[in-house]
Image (cartoon, rainbow, N blue to C red; front, side):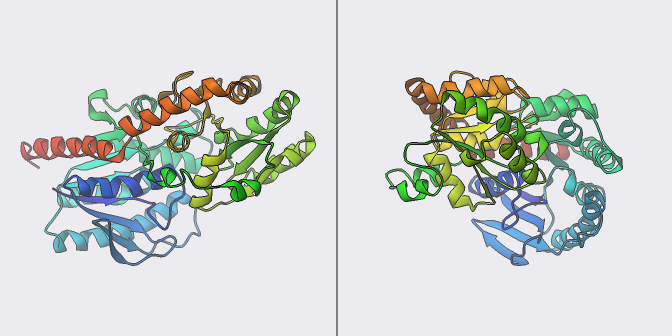
Length: 397
């Protein structure tokens, strides 16, 4: 089967979970017999055409980033659609158009109509979900409307978690039998390579030998709950003074978080790294004593899978997809969202009970290998492709 995938993110431009998902899923689909053509904006350069692990990648120049994100997306989608139309003739058509989130909905819906080809949408997050059920302003309202339109136009909708499937049903009135739940995945290879490697010198860059590292990585935005972690730090240190907090990532809350750490008198025990390369992030997972993700909203939480794949203990908020990925007391610790006291308990429990923690780590690693490997997820996706293709054959259009 021949599939046209359109994604707002693809290397070298990977911002969040969507980009990581597409980057890993695409070659796994090829390994499972799909002829995959991937179309993406060239946000950070890259060749106009190249083949990566069997994936045929096409990049187009995006619209200048001078408008709001909804307008930029719409203008860029005009260029994506134009390129896709030329590819259609060059490649003798496609069996399915597969888009990821609303950012490529405009091109996907246009191609569906002009080429009479089924549209499949993977929804990674929703604007209303990010707003915790609310839409604040004209741009979020426009994004929400586009999300509704995409799920309406799609032949089927893939969601990464049961929670995200609930959001799609609740916010967009999508029938339950139109939704497939297929999780994100993770490869342990990039973490396994550090097994047996002496990371002492690397660790010394972040903490003293006697300190225990509490690690957060992700965007520094309200929905990730990093401010809850900052508020928890004095309480953790009161009982476990050897803790050292390493917070990696960038975002609009960075200045506020640094200032709040100073106000609380704990800035000497908190290291804000800013942006870190992928290799450093992976090594930090390997040396950390606990990875903490106190999100207020998390459709899936691939960072938790990364920690589990690195054999790093996890403490996560019991929200969204995180509570599906991490099973309390079995593969990690889950805590109440937006609750400093609960987060403090989860971190201290992990640091103070190493034997229980090690057991959870091994359970988590085993589950990652068996349940969240990309080939399994690609096979699940291919089954959706085949179902759509078979249904399309029976329909006049």
